[in-house]
Image (cartoon, rainbow, N blue to C red):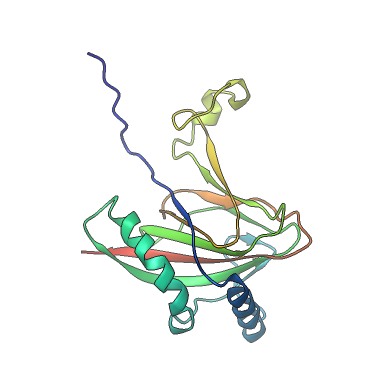
Length: 190
């Protein structure tokens, strides 16, 4: 008897939230007005706030928290602690370099404003040598075993949860409108 066992799977969680994206867009621009320089970590151009105050965004996390609980239970019988969160505003041609989120176990992003061609979130296969061994153009049917990367199209109100160690990047915003999102980090609480 032959068996295939999937070892070391990497679940990515996506769901469209029932939130007021107009309110969140307005809050995002207000944050930028309060702190126009922001900070620079993994972005090429664009704007990123410093870590934000939870109480202002509690209404958003009230919508996110049930999904966090579902996602974390894929890994542990544990709760989750919100470590930090910030807003990203990417203009025309802005993007984010390949990065991870150190000092956290889980991360997430929620999109507020997503014009056409505003860029995708792309996760890279943890097996970094895959693309050096096999030319991806020769693979007729890419699947979870043979793909070098996985793209998620940015959509308004889309929540994406993923392990913080998973390398990812954001492709350039080719729209002449801003792409706005909120990113956050979590740690399990046992």
